[in-house]
Length: 371
Image (cartoon, rainbow, N blue to C red):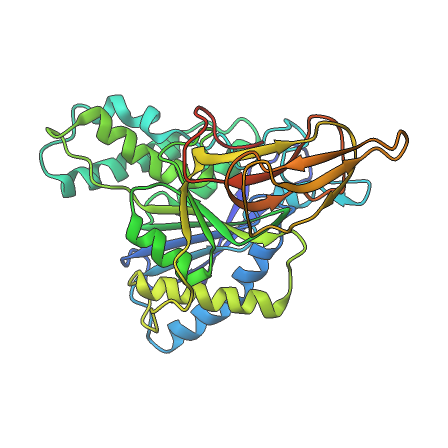
C-alpha cells in the first residue's frame, strides 16, 4: 500500500485542503480500478466502506493476489466535509457557489475533440492510447480558478485512465441501487449482484456531467463524432453506487459491503479471489423512467410503505398533513414501478420532492439528475 496526497490550491490565506488516496498493486498494472467515497460529504456509508475495503486490499496485496492496480480515495471532498451550518453537515453543495460537488466535472470530449480529429486512425487500440494521452494533457492544462474546480481536476487526474470507476454515495432513505450507462451490461449485472443492489438505473448521458459520466460519456460522444472510420473503443465501466440511506452507517454493514466489492474486483480481474456474486439479479430500468413525487401541500410527511416496495399507479404510499388546518392529502405513486427512495426530512413545503419511483418505460428527457 502506498499513500498519495494532493494539496488543493487555497482560496483563503492560511488554509489548505489535502486530498488523500491509497494505492495498491504496481502502478500502471491492468486492469486499473478507482474507487472513491464522500464526494457528497454528508454521505458517510461510502467512506466507512472504503476504510474496511482498504484493509482487505492490503491483505490481498500482502498475499500476492493483486493483479491490477487499485486507487482508493476514502474522502473525495475535504472541502465539503468541513462545511457545517448550525451543527448540521452540508457537503452536497459548495456553500461558496451552491454548486453540487458532483456536477460540472470536466467535459473531456469537448476539451479534446478538435485536437483528436487529426490524430485518430483505423486502429481502436491505438486510438485508446491517443485519447488517454489527450485526456491527461487536457486535465493538466485545465485552469483551476477556485478550490472546487481544483478538486474536480485532482480527482479526474487520479481516475481518468481507470478501467473501472466506482463512486460510492448514499441517498436519504433508499434501497441499495446504482446508476451507470448501458455500455457494459455484463459488468453492470456483475456489480449489482456482487453488491446486492436491487435496482440499476441506466442512461448514456444523464446531464450535469457527474463524476461517473465524466469518465464514460466522453468515449460515447467521441465515438458518435468520429464514427467507424476512426473507431473509438468503449470507455471504462463507471458507476455511481448508492449505499442505502444516510443513517445506514455501521461497521458490520460496511465490512459486508467491502467484502462484496472484493467479489466485484475479483470478477473484474483486478484481484485474485472468489468472484461469484451471492445476490440475485437486479431490476434494470432506464433512468428516464424514474418518476418524481412532489408535495401538493406543506406539512408533515408520513409513509405507508418503505423504499423497496413495488407500487402501482395511483396507489397511496403516504400522506402530508397540515397540523394547523388539519388538511391531509394522499401521496400516490405516479407510475407502476419500484419505490426506491424517499426524502430524509419528515416535513415539507408545497412543491418539494418527496420520493422517486423507478419504472421500465421512459417518461422524461433532458437533464435526468436532481440537484
